[in-house]
Image 1 (cartoon, rainbow, N blue to C red):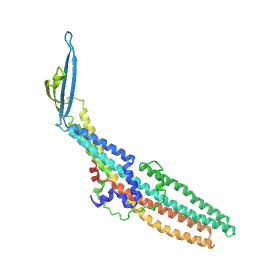
Image 2: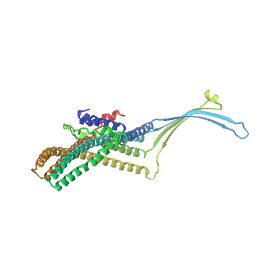
Image 3: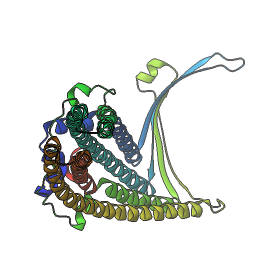
Length: 424
C-alpha cells in the first residue's frame, strides 16, 4: 500500500487530536448506519453462496413406511429407504451468470459498507471541528462581553462625573446586551453538536457532554497536505466502486436472461431399498434404482423471455448511467473541496491580520476614551469590529478544518481496497 493510501485510510490521525481519533474509531465500530450496512453485506454474501450451491447436484434422503390392506386380504407393510439426486447441467451458462451477478452484488454491498464508513468518519470529524469552533467562539464572546462590561462601568462613572452623556451609557448597555445575547445561542449550538457526536458514536444524546464540555484547543488541519490526486484515486471512492460493481451485476443478469431462453438439461436418479419388514430393510432388502435424463425447452411464452432480456438490458443501461454520474459527482466533490480549501486559507490569513489590528485598535480606543481624547462612538465601533473579526477567524478556521475533512472524504479516505478484500 502506498504512503498516500495510508494517509487516506486513517486521515483523521493527521489532525493530531487523540479525542477525535477515539470518536471516529468508536463510530466506525458501533454506529447504527455502519452496522446496518454490515448486515446488508452479510445478506449479499449469503445470497451469493445460495447461487454457488445451485451449481452442484442436489441429494436428498428419504425413509417411508406404508401399511395397506385390500378387501379379502390381510394387511401388509412396506418399508422403503433411499437417496434421490438431481443435477441441472448449466449448458448455456444461466446459473453461472446468476452466480456472477450475486458475486458482483456482494462486492457492491462491500463497497456500500465502505461508503457508509467514509461518510460516518467524515461526519464525526466535521461535527467535532464545528464543536471546537463553537467553543472557541463562545470564549471570544464571553471575553468581549467582559471587556464591554468593563467599558460600561467606566462610562457609568464618567456619566456620574459629568464627563459623558446618558447617550453614551445607553449605547454601552446596548452593546453589552447584544454581545451577551450571542452566548445562549452559542451554548445551544455547542450542546447540539455534543448530542450529534454522541448519536454518531452509538450513544444516547448527552452521553459525551462531560467529555466534550472542556473547551480544548481548536484542532489544526495539516498544512502539509501533499497527496497526489491522479484520476485513479477516484476509483478509491467506495461509491464509485459500488456503481462499477452494479454494472457488472447488471451485465451478468443480461447474460442470465439470454441463457434462460434456451433448453435446460437435467439428470436425476434414485437408489434405495424396499422390504416388507423393517428387519428385512436393514438386512439389505430389494434394491430399487432409477435414472432419468430430461430436456425441456420453451416452445411458446408469448415473448416473455425476450422481454425479460430487454428489461435486463435497460437495467444495465441504468447502471451504466449511474456509474457515469458517480464519476462526475466524485470529480465535482474533489474540485469543490480544493476550491473551498484554497479560498478559506486565503480568507483566514486576511482575517487574522484584521483581528490583530482590531485588537490593537480596541486597546488604543479604550485608553484614549479613558483619557477623554475620543468620544464613546469610536470605542463602540472598535469593540464591535474586534468581536466580529475574532468570531470570523474562529468560524473560518473551523471551516478550513471541515474543508480538509471533505477533501479526504471526496478522495474516498477512510477505506482501502486491500481492507475490503481482507474482510471477505
